[in-house]
Image (cartoon, rainbow, N blue to C red):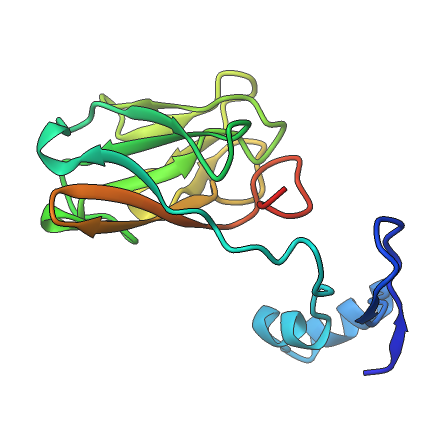
Length: 178
């Protein structure tokens, strides 16, 4: 890659960036190039946004009741999230039976606050009815959203559950860490 000035007006550092055109993207996908390879080739510039996620204690395992959400903010105070102990194992789950998961509550469509509906075992956005499956990494089931809900990475230490990171981009942000 060629070294070019960072296109962002927020810094004066030099980043290894390459401008991806529509033609490049169509050609790459037509050739079967994977998204992972594209991410490596057209990597986001490193810089001030590369901060470590905070470790935040959310709850104790023994205080969680199945299908009763626990609200918290992560990775900062402006990011509503929800912790749920499901009744079955979930992708990315931790704790007993890998049933404890957490997600950003901001819908990936327009940022409306989604809520967990235990009778349907789904997270639903009241604005445009995008629906997400918490047992399948927040995958979008139906609706206007085009991406899964960002999943909060969890760690269990003893009886405590900690938030440790986010998989996916929180709605309205260029980076999860502000």
